[in-house]
Image 1 (tube, rainbow, N blue to C red):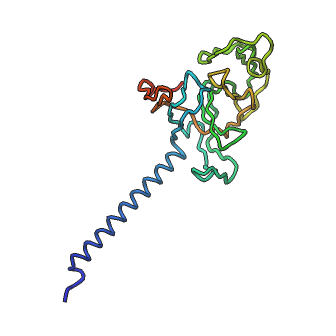
Image 2: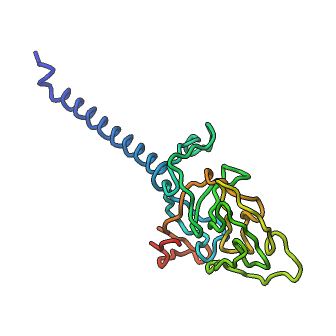
Image 3: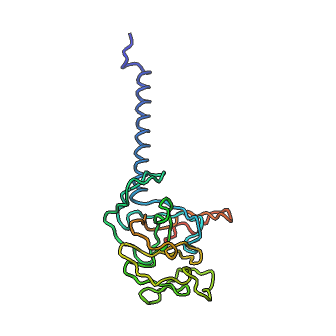
Length: 223
């Protein structure tokens, strides 16, 4: 009579079960780590529009730091955008002028927007014939791109806006491509709690027109 513990068939079954369990555990741990990294540390985003040209081009893929302005407690079920509660941010800090940020679009929080911080809390901000003024002083806006000349008559709010006083807990954001950007000139201040993170670098870029990779943009630090 054969002893089960000495049966090679039974031993093989045990080994297969053990191997399956190891692979399953490894996959679950990897998924959990990926979810934690995506939620709290860094997340990848793709640029779908030209509102930040020439800093960011359509087809650029970027990495965004999720903890630059505090720790965001997830308030939605990942991947399906179902909100569970209001935004909670721990250890929050305000962005600096010039930062490129990703945020929940205030008019539709299922969409993510990317813009540059121009106005900070307490700033008196105004746009006169496309030129930005902060606290009545011209703002050196070197990265702004203009594809059209200022209108001969006031063009509100695109070329002429304000003055407005930015309230506490909010910032004023604009796209670098000024004549092709839906930003704070059109929908108002941005609550800092809606910021998802700070754009860090480009890790991949695909030119849809040329159907080719933009190798020269790999690793570009965003500023």
